Image (cartoon, rainbow, N blue to C red; front, side, top):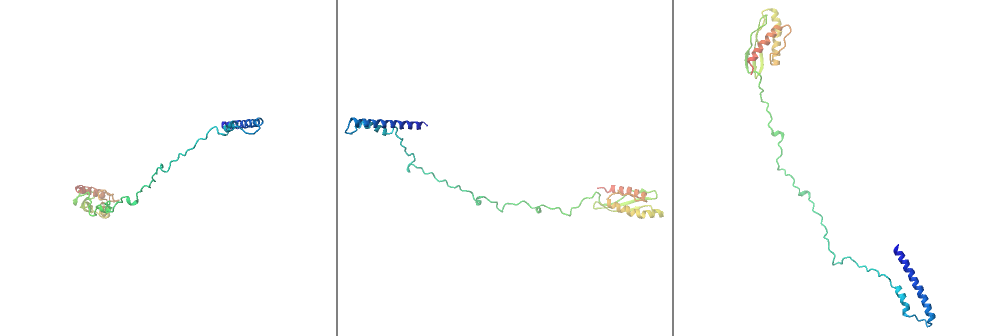
Length: 206
């Protein structure tokens, strides 16, 4: 805004000088009829024609070709290739397979709870007679039980023990002990059998 005002002022000053100079020329022509204008009369015009402020001289600040410095072009970095990595060789030892471990053999013999041999039990009273058994031990187990004595003097005893004796023998082999159930109708024989077999197995304990 201030530069615009200064320009207006300069314009009015110049116009004033021109008008004044024109009036002066007319006055000189009236005073001096030959029409010549002195150099002193042109001095104000020359002063007005010259600019009040000289424009600054712009100089180029760009470097000359001799002053330019060449910047090296960056080269791409070398990336490692897949072939630069060390791969494991096939000569490395592999973990042992399950087949390398020894397997248990089927020839192992489990030790039984009895010593091998033949053991005779105590003679036990069955009221109608006496009961005595013999236990045969093989490989630590009861292999056989034999009745050495049982009540058979009466026909009733023979009938009862004919089915009780094989039943007691079979159950003893199954349970591998004297903990057998009593036979219905042969309770006395069953109890005497249990006591006699317990004494025999006590002697065969390992």
